Structure formats: structure tokens, C-alpha cells
Image (cartoon, rainbow, N blue to C red; front, top):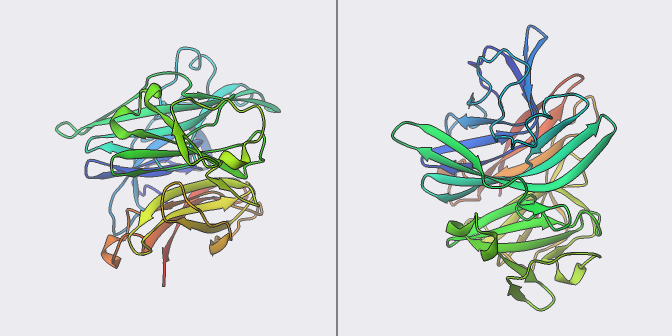
Length: 335
């Protein structure tokens, strides 16, 4: 996946996509630019625009074009706390995402980013996740990105929206991994109307043991396996969810573990399940010299001419060669 018109060789990892107006935008994590193998610039996240639904691997880099300085501006703005500590190899704040963003209206979308501080090259502190709001002015083609607060869900709670999300009839379902107590095996979910995404007081949280929703946000101090909407026997790393007309079911496309190269799928009749946990393999991505790929995400908005939505999907992942990491894409068509 690349922009052939960029004067730099751009390397990046992670990321996700969503639609806004009549465009498909892509977020990526660490983004580095080189010219003739000479380092020119970097930022911890960037944004691109898909050029065509027919050739989804062709992108136009929206935040990394023609800027020859170490301090590329990221797609997501820093707060006043984060800005002084950025772009340093040993100490910096990073805003990373490994799932798709959410279209909330014809001209607006939101995306959840993990907020982590590198205290040194050997020590990191996960702060929680933050939500970026994107507004597109279709008359001027200007995209405005804002953050209403530094942290949406702090590291003492579940990071809803950072693992996977989807919209069903105007309601956003936001999925979070229990990374502290379940080793990434339990998935918890919250829901909110798309027009209330920025109002945390309107979020409801699901308890699978009672099959009820509550406005009281859980404050986990131990594993809550019975409350999880999914409790798998293997750990998750990255994922994406969507409704597939072709399958008449909701699909979860994911990588298990962090050091992996295999796309797997689970499915359910509703956003809260019951979700299958038989770990059906979809596709094993070719591995680079470093031994594994990561950041696998599925994208359902492409290949609509193939038939019902979900018959063909785009799979993207972070591929590592000897020196660099860059996103690769594959087309998957269900039989």
C-alpha cells in the first residue's frame, strides 16, 4: 500500500480505515520518510486517502507529503502536555491505532487511538485511549481533526473502541480487550448513539452474564470473564468488526497474539453474540525476514461489485523486511 507520487519512500505500520463523505481515509501509526535511503522525517501517526475502490492499495498521503523535517505533524493533534515530549527516539508520546474508524455522519468520523508514553527506549506507560473527531468540509475539501480530551478511557478501565467497533442502525458498538487481567482473551463492549459519541455520560456497558446494559462504567479490579461478550481460549491482538450481508452475520476479523501472521474469523447473529471461538483461519500472510507480521485488520467497504457486502474484503497488515515496516494488502473472497 503506497502513494506512488510521494517524493519520499514512506514506511508505516498499524492503522485502519473508514468512509467519510465519498472518501475512504486511512490512519497509520509510526510513519517514516526516506529519500535515497537517507532519513528525512517521522511522525507517530499519519493519514492517507484511498484513490480508488478498484485499486485500494493506491493511496494519497495527506499528512506526509513533501515535508522535509524531523518533526512531521501527525494526523492527530497533540495536547499541550504531549507536544513538548514528541518525536524523540528515547522519550515521546505516541498515538497509535490498530482498528478501523467509525463514520458517524456523512461528513464526520471518529477514531480511537492508544496513548502511550515512552519514558525511555526500555520503559513505556500506557495511559489509555483517546478519541479523535474528524470533520470534512466537502465544499473546500478541508479535513479538521480535533480531540476533546487527552484520555477518553484511562488505563484503569477498558479501552472501548480500541480493539474493534461497528455501527448498527445508528448505534456504535465499541469493543475493548481486557489486557490487564485476561491476557487479551476477554472482549468487553459498550454502546452509544453515533451522535453522542463525544458524550461519555451516554455510554452504556454490557454485562454478558445478565444480558443487560448499564450506564455505570465498570472499574475492573479483577478478571470479569462472565461479563465479557467474548472470552476466547487464545489472546487477541488486533481486530475489526462489520456486518456481512453475504454471511447474514456479524464478523470479527482478527490476529491472535501479537507476533502473528494469520487472519482468523469469528461470527455472531448480533453485536453481543454469541460469538464463535473456534478460530477459523482465513489467510496466512507471507512473513518477512523478521519472522512475523502484525496489525492485521479487515476492511469491508471495498470490492462491492463482487456481490453482497462481505463476500470480498480487503485484508491489510504490517509487513517487516530487514530494515523497514510497511502495510501490505490482500483481497479475500469467500466461496
